[in-house]
Image (cartoon, rainbow, N blue to C red; front, side, top):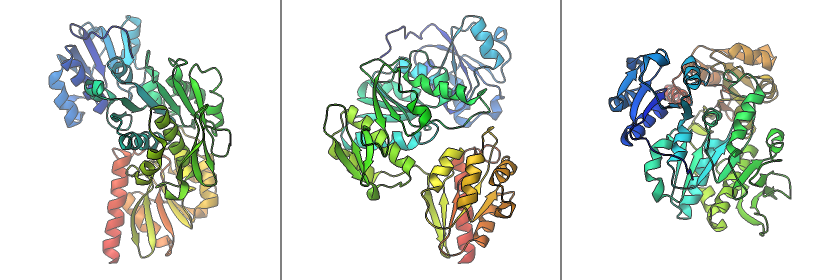
Amino acid sequence: MYSGDRRLRGRTVGVLGLARTGAACVRFLADHGATVVALDSRPVDGLRQDSRDALSRAAFVAAPYGTLTDLPPIDLMVVSPGVPTDVPLLCQAWAAGVEVIGEVELAYRFCEAPICAVTGTCGKGTTVTSLGAMLSAAGIASTVAGNIGLPLIGQMDRSAQLDLVVAEISSFQLETTVHFHPHVAVLLNITEDHLERYPDFEAYAAAKRLIFRNQTARDFAILCVDDARVSAMADGLQAQVLRVALDDPGANGRLEDGALVLQLPGREAVTVAHRERLPLQGRHHLGNFLAAGLAALVCGVDPERIGPALAAYEPAPHLMTPVATVEGVTFVDDSKATNPASAIADLSGIAGPTIVIAGGKEKDTDFDEFGAALASRAKAVILMGECAARIEAAVGVAALCHRVASMQEAVQLAFGLAQPGDTVALCPACSSLDMFESYARRGEVFALAVRSLGAQRA
């Protein structure tokens, strides 16, 4: 736990970025006696309603903000994860000697419970929520928060009553950590993503590695070493390293004859679940469940509780979610697959002929592997959004690809191309923000279009 100065009363704290996380920071800081300066690049009327409500707690609001000299003297700047660290205002703050931290670092400084933090390009949400289910089944008081959509800072006032805080942490959040020190740190994978924010892939990978920076020999680092980049990070870590590798009989988390097997150092191996009883079947999901299971064992969960918790686990919305079957054609919402690696992995778990709806906002991602997977796997590819042309080029088979302007058009066209027994999967491999406010809204619009189709056909 943090041993430094936690005092906020009497300090002037800037909060830069007033979306959900920034609004939660404003409320927490004001509740703890800080004078809050609320800052955003957008005007107030462009903010969400809950953000506008939080502004009543701030002593000074600049939205849109100008330069540091236009603001009251600031002692500490808390930056939201959506704000790049090279924006001029932050550069001015650093130059003036202002301490700049992120919401995760602020939360850590006030956290009274051990933290299990999970990062990776894909699978973070599944890992933290399945771990939360295991902890709940074992009667261990915990919360699941962070990048999953529930700001970590909003859980800190009750952290003294918890046995464990489970945190999904993004690379953006790790960039602005200083002392953040999870007792258990999990790294699932590192594949190309968010290259619109980072100068290159190595910078993105380096941000992920920050999750281990402050760990000691009393802590645990869980690494899914089937990913070669993750495996390369195992050497030199201070924490005790536990490895997940599906087909390695020496790994701490592994697959044996279709069963999930866990083994902590110096202990006997335990079989916790059989693959066919799990709610998600792709190999990457098995790795997520194994990582969560190892974290659960380290945190005191009885192995006998893990299997039932996994069998009863309900995946997050928009993750390989069946929507409806219309005249024998099954529609699946995988809007949560916002990068190529997630999309490829999820498509591998679908049996039979598949029509894929893909595309979305540009993130400077390499689509070559995704395009090759579509070319070999998909019966047809329906493309929309900013990245449609790039994905079509990566597929390399013009006859396979179709362009549409809306989700409704995509669903209608997919149904027209499908036959009974086929699957139509919304598997975008891209962010939603060119056409939708969130991946969740994209999935909702897909489901509405499918249900409208079903009503028409009925």
